[in-house]
Image (cartoon, rainbow, N blue to C red; front, top):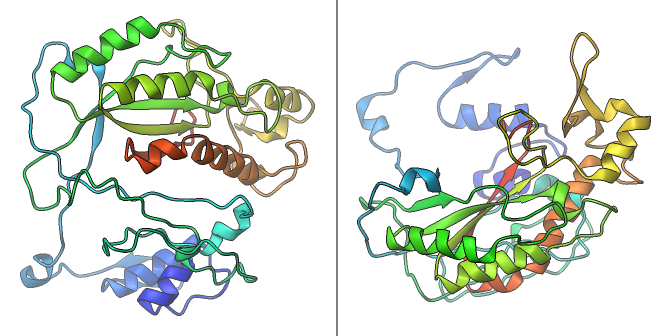
Length: 320
């Protein structure tokens, strides 16, 4: 982000600027006044200035259950996926100053992925590579079309990363397809994929599920969920953090968030270990980075084909 702001926005940011510096610089560029203590304010912009802001539609997942009694009008899809390629040699620290942008040059199919020495001035071209499927040529900006994605129910993948009901998922997808939705949203749980041993990723259940989704020619939005799911009496499924992480937590409870009364919340890891090597020699950021890199490499074919259209990060607790 810092490299992109410096290169394309001419923002005078220090090499290790924090998020407050970035937000302050962006606010000033937009015409706001930012005081030394962080207080930010501005007068109401004139109508001519307000008209210059572009508006884009946002793709929002909806529950598949909510589609049972409704129909969605079909519309021509017109999109162009932009895909992130990650080199195995990259580290989480390399991402501190990277901005990810969508290329508009259609003839530029691949960008450079060669490493450089400085992590403080890392060019976005080293991380980003567009893979054009050729199926769609534009996006939905400026149109009345709103893509619809339905959230698949949690429970099709068990705690051993196995697809438990292939026939049931086919029936569910068949029903969704009949409603002319654009695609589905699937949550990939850290507590399932890396459940038993650090850096031992088991994607087999999700691979089988994604292949079925591809058979139905539906798009796929993936939520990489790093938090616990369930636990209440109403929940039929319980997905905890990885077992090896919980074992660490028995000896070092400070890896979890703690309230005033000293109660630990095991739904999600504390931000306090983002840069502390307390997870079998890795920091919290490194653990998340390794998981996301494994996902990107495992499902490279689905990115290349444009099946995976978006990635979201669920940071907990309960995605909040």
